[in-house]
View (tube, rainbow, N blue to C red):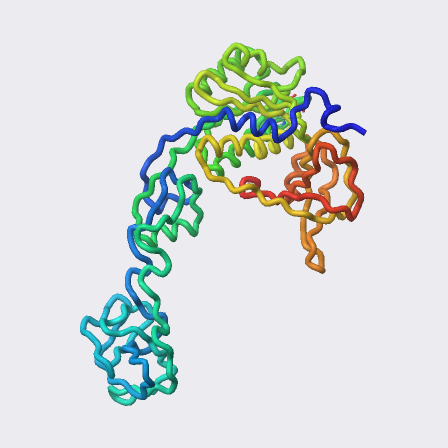
Length: 410
Ligand code: AMP
Ligand code: MG
């Protein structure tokens, strides 16, 4: 049986990823922006709370605030009202109480709230029908976040919830990393844009379009440069121009060893590039390196290969470039509903649909034909079935590792 060591010239996936990450130096340029525009941006500095949340002791219920004396209380005299935003400004003595609404500041002298349902009001006297423990129904100053506490760490990508947290702290401006500029083009004489007629031998270009969508979701500023012919001079000009405009240049096509694969020849002149045969399927040919002032990623032309290498190799590299704290993706174990064809030698990222069966167990079904030109195999899927480099065929009902598609594939 083959194993990874008998696949000469193929670099294991983890090695390719680690080697690439080791070469990438984060870009540290940052800017201050309004919190309201900060969704999906990456924090350039730690955020500490400028305030206590909540900012004062307040009531968790509609009821009556009073000073708990320790002993049982039968009745209290109502001396005023504390409403959210309209606090009671006086002080409350023992035997007195203040009508209070949820969120209203606790009046001076009060430590406890009794719910209105547990009292009977008779003029300005309330009769307590129940005894409540001291400090009941009070939300304490700073119990959610203390002033000065670390709220978010540098490198965090801000979610919709985080935007709300920033607002709740009264933070109007946040320091975020500047988005990286990514220039993108596809190479191939056969490629046409949607809307154009196809001549014999032509196909529609898809790679730059899903890459643009994926990179935009990642938060990059994408510079789309369209389709470049399989022509050494034109590829060279495009790379020079891309390098001048962007921090990162991504191309697709022309990275294998065909007669029209000029990327290697051009890059040998313009920069320093490593061409790798990464031991993954789909996606074997992949190039990574440096142009004079940018990083270069050369993706294979086959759409599924381009998509999987962009997702699994380029996005982690861009995350490092943007200083993003990434948690490792969650891998799950699922029972395969179907047998899976797998040859030892490369790590497979097969496409599957995972779902829970009636017993609540996670199962996965292959999307069928796994050709690297079949983009619809990816569109139907909601996860990768990740099969290790040395793994052979999988029988139906065997447990396999699944990697749910993340936001960049949605
Ligand atoms: P290449 O890597 O240039 O040899 O291309 C491999 C295969 O992918 C060929 O069948 C190409 O026609 C196809 N291909 C290359 N680039 C694209 C693209 N941008 N969109 C769709 N298919 C492509
Ligand atoms: Mg080509």
